[in-house]
Amino acid sequence: MLLIVAESGEEASYLPELQACGYQLRVREPEFEQHRMLRTAERDVHLHVFSEGASEIDRYLRFRDRLRSSPRDRQRYQDLKQPLAAQDRADMNAYADAKADLIESILAAAGRKDKS
Image (cartoon, rainbow, N blue to C red; front, side):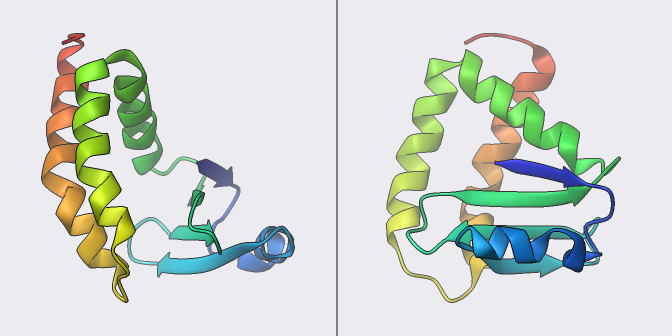
């Protein structure tokens, strides 16, 4: 999921309410457009938080739209993500790095606007 707030660096304006709903802050990337990532204790929901106007918002939406429109890419992502998600990792960057090449491939296909 994607949450867009006025200023993600101002965590006091949104983080306490999300934590009260069960979300745990897992990633804080101030150097990367103030990206924050939260997840539930069950690890079944990941919530990415960006400030309004962040360039990454478009990438997240294009990726989502591509997965919705391409059964093939959706399956490829599922086949990679499920075994990765089942592994317990202390470093979330290793998880993200393991998905990076496939995500870039899917985003490239989204840029071509094909439906394969």
